[in-house]
Amino acid sequence: MIDSHKVLWDNCLEMIQANVSEQQFKTWFATIVFESFSEKDRILLLQVPSTYAYEYLEQYYVGLLSKVISHCFGPNVTLRYRLVTEQARSQAANAAAATATSQPVSGGPQPVVSTSPQPSAVPPQPAARPQTYTQPRPLAASQPRQGMSPQTVRQPAASGSNRQETPMRQGLNPQLNLRQTFNNYIEGNSNKLPRTIGLSIAEHPGKSTFNPFFIYGPSGCGKTHLVNAIGVRCKELYPQRRVLYVSARLFQVQFTDAVRQNLTNDFLNFYQSIDVLIVDDIQEWATAAKTLDTFFHIFNHLFRNGKQIILASDRPPVELQGMKDRLLTRFSCGLIAELEKPNTKLCVDILNTKCRRDGLKIPEDVIEFIARTANGSVRDLQGVINSLLAFSVVYNSHINVQLAERIIKRSVKIDDRPVTIDDILDKVCTHYGITLKNVFSRSRKREYVIVRQVSMYLAQKYTKLPATRIGELVGGRDHSTVIHSCATVEKRLQVDKSFAAELDSIENSFKLKQEVPPSK
Figure 1 (cartoon, rainbow, N blue to C red):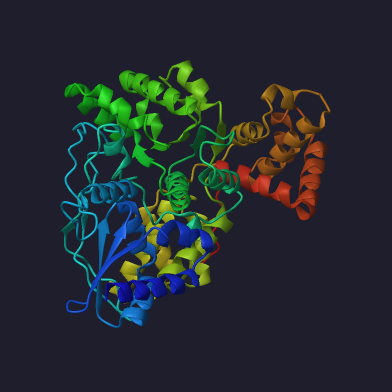
Figure 2: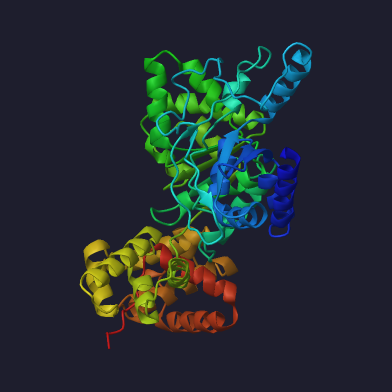
């Protein structure tokens, strides 16, 4: 009977293989081992190699599993998982062979409690989840996913030869948000470079020149989403890799606890065992000298051993006050990528994607209004949409621009400070890497001329200064030079898409506000 049930599971695998890519099948399904099926209880028991594999299957493939299992085993099947690592499986096989003549082994690999010491200070403790699986539920093609009650799964004991490696190599929770992936990370001009580089790193961690990968940008621009997406994709492609996402604050708390408990070496050993380390908001370490010294040693160890390091901050390395040069130079030796606030077009794309994903119907003019007024923050965009829907449902109101305006005034801090010529010159010079001295000079170098022309064009567009005054403030030029510069920029915008994208990025960097059309 067991053989016939195994055949049924093989049929399930064939159906799954026909519905997923080869890489997906090898990563998530080929490692599943059939253990048993009870005709009486209608329970299918499968072995998975890691907690992360179980979580990923439940997150993304529960519908597919429901359909194929119902098709092959019949309706009302309850699916259960048992965590049995490859090491445990080989150990069990060796033990069975050694004792076959005296005491037969039955029931397959039996999980036992690990006796290997794992320090109490070893991270990531504060957020670590117990190794329990939830109560299985009947699988049916039309049945929605239900909640599950605990079924404990324990790790096998480690042997003496790899006594220290085993507890770290088993059961690591990567602390990743599985909902933040590249699939729902919308690409635009403001994030194209970081997204492309991040995808390359996820596919080849530690083997590219982009190590470390340093991402910076203002709050709400998508840094946390991007670094999580890198981690999730890396785990998809390399399930055996030890990937860990940790906030700078949590890292500091863990380090403090380790020092207090005299377990600093255990703390170092843990983090030095990571294959892909992602640290978010590292600007919070600016005044934490001891934390920085400890991270310096962790960084050096990982970097020398070809492990991938990904760092996120709200400012570039040169602006991280309080950090020693030895760390700043290491942060800068890989790739530094800026995430700018999304422009209006990207905000519209993000909102439309959210509406399609959540099945929402919001008028296009409302989407456009929110995109223009929500300060280019993805978090603000999502918050406004959620508030808008809640308000419309509770008060049975029609979703329109007037309602959106009321919500935005309550939830979004609008930056309405007038833009000055100094703001424009500062951002344009920063974008092109040109100093003000060069802009104000009489040099006719092409790169200097472009900066002057763009500055004059933006000054005329977003300030109320006359052409004569603009010329005076941009190196003492006359009004005819300003008029010519503006005409040149406008003409180039019509034919040069990359130049238009550059200009859009500059405008977005200092939060230029467009006039909101009056509501009809």
